[in-house]
Length: 354
Picture (cartoon, rainbow, N blue to C red):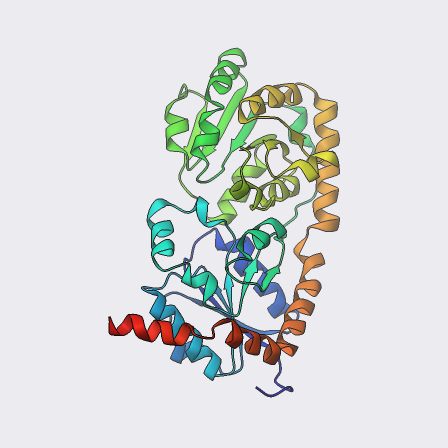
């Protein structure tokens, strides 16, 4: 590895979809706009065709066929003077049962067999550090922030947004409160995304249900609402998530009722209403729905916060600086990786012979 190699980045998208917009497509497109030599490759991809020598390779959620395959990928990249970072934005305990078992069967190879991890929050980095000592934290940020939209908070109907993917257990705990609210307020409409069980358990007259949307449609649908419900029960895995949905709601001038996990920092600053359990989310949302002054103040404060502190425009220069520092230290990082894997090569060879 030569010290004068310029930074070039290859991003491998293993599971293309709308969920990649905030974590992959927007931030790396922003780096391209800053003049960074950065390319994005969607699966299926062949290393020989898309990975240039001497590149910083960021691989989003690799799911190899075996531990041996992940090891071979890493060694191929090392020989070409590359650094490999595994992009990982969720705690493994929150994965569906099938992928989670594959990870365990492979001894968490995507997390262990790489130079480092590319993560979204400090809690997640701390939780994964046992698998890999090098964990970078690059927070999520919002690229699209429309102007403050206060007019929708002055007239009905009252639209409430519920779109927390793979959070059926927490959302089910709101069911009783949602039924009572629908029965008591004929202006109320619920916009439910992805959670078919919750939607089908409620009276259908004022329920709008949709499966996963494109990111653009998701943000447009969110923007039609005045309130969003963000229930997360207390757990280590939930604390490893990022408040990206609260940021998106703030950008779309939507007030949020959240909790009890994850959103405490924002609630202390008056950017969201925090509750002690998922069951209490609906109760607090009802209060906020009928307190227009408090709701508008919260919306205005949250919108200012996301524009001034959590916009991608603010975060991109810091992200670029971190990548450049990492690239300058690539020789030391690769040496530490070799030391960490001392004996791994022999162990894998032994597995192949059994």
